[in-house]
Length: 418
Ligand code: NDP
Ligand code: MG
Image 1: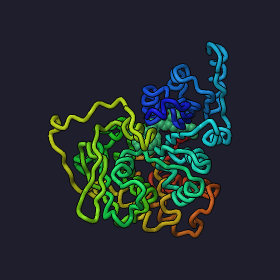
Image 2: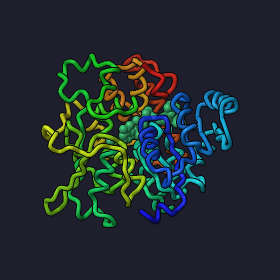
Image 3: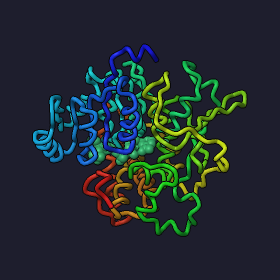
Image 4: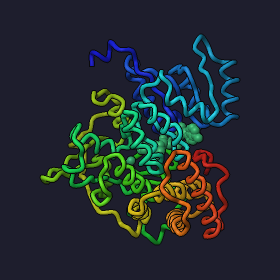
C-alpha cells in the first residue's frame, strides 16, 4: 500500500464513462486521487452526463463517438473551459479505440455496452493493459481471439461483472482452476419476472423489463436480466475467462443478490463471495487487485438479512438461458450470432417494435437460419468478427421483420428509446 502512495498515479481510460459502470468507476476513483489519474473518458453522446466529470477529473483526452456531440463538446470547451489542460476531443472510431493502447494509460475500463465496445477492448488486450472487463459482449463474440491475445500480450483481464469477479475472488491465485474446480455456480437474481405468471408475459412493457429488483443498470443489460439472456451471456463469459467447460457451469437463482457467485471444489467445499448488490465493490476489487481499496459501499449487515434463498431457473420462463448453452455447445460463431441477434431484438423491444417474448424467438430463428447456411465459420481475426457481427445483425433484422413485422430500430443507442 505504501509503495503505491509513493508511486505516480496510474492512468485510467474509461470506455463508457457516462454509463452505469462508468459512473460507478468514477465514484470509486474519486476516493483515490493519489492512486489513479483519469487520462481519458469515452462516451457515445450524453454530454450532460459527461460534462461534470470533465470538470471534476480534467482528463487529457475525451472520446465522443457521435460526431455531432463531439462538435458540440468542442464548442462548449472553447467557451466554458477555465484554466489550462483543456481536453482534446476525438471522434474518429480508430482514434478512440487507440486510446486503449495509449502509453499514458495503465488501466482500461471496458464498459461500453454491446459489440460497440469490441474494438477498444481488443486494442487494450493487444496492448497488454490491465483490462477491467464489464463489456461481456466482446468476450461472447470474440472469446477465443481475446483470450489468445491476452496471453500473447500479457494483458491482465480482470472481470468486473459481479458474478465473474466473485468467482475470480474464490479461485486460488495462480492455480489453473480446471482440475480443482468441480463447478462454477453463477448466481442470478431471476430479474423482475421470476414470479410473474407466464400468462402475463405477453403484456410485459419496457418499463416492467427495466425495473430490476436489486441492481441499477443500463437499459440493455436490464432487459437482458429480465430475459436471463444476461445470465446466458455470463455463462459464455465464464467459460472463456476461467477455461471451465459449460457442463461445469451451473446457474442458481438467488433473488437477494447477496452471494454474487460461488465455486464448488472437488472436496465438497463451496466458496462464495458476498456483498451488497453494488458494482462499486467489483470495480474497486479489479482496480486495486491484488490490493484492496475502499469502494464507498457500506458493509454488509448479515443480521439484517431476512434469509438467502436459492432455486433452479425455470426453462419455460427463461428460454434465453438454454439458447446460450446451445450456443456454447455449437461453438464457432454461434455465440456471436446469439449476441448480435439479442442486441437487435433488445433494441427493437426498447423502441416498442417487438414484444418481450419476441426476443428469444428472434434469437432462436436467427441462430437456426445462420447455421443452415455455411457462411459462419469460427472467425480468425477481429475484422472477421466485426464482419460476422454485421451479417448476423442483418439476418436478425430480416427474421424480425418476417416473424413480427417489426421495423428495425434506427440506431442501437439504447438511451434514445422509450
Ligand atoms: P449503459 O447503457 O449504462 O452505458 C453504456 C455506455 O456505453 C455509455 O457510456 C454510452 O455512452 C457508451 N456507448 C454506447 N455506444 C458507444 C459507442 N459506440 N462508442 C462509445 N461509447 C458508447 O450500460 P452499462 O454501464 O449498464 O453496461 C455497460 C457494459 O457493462 C455492458 O456490456 C453490460 O453488459 C456490462 N455490465 C454492466 C453491469 C451494470 O451493473 N450496469 C453489470 C455487469 C456488466 P452514452 O451514455 O453517451 O450513450
Ligand atoms: Mg453480472
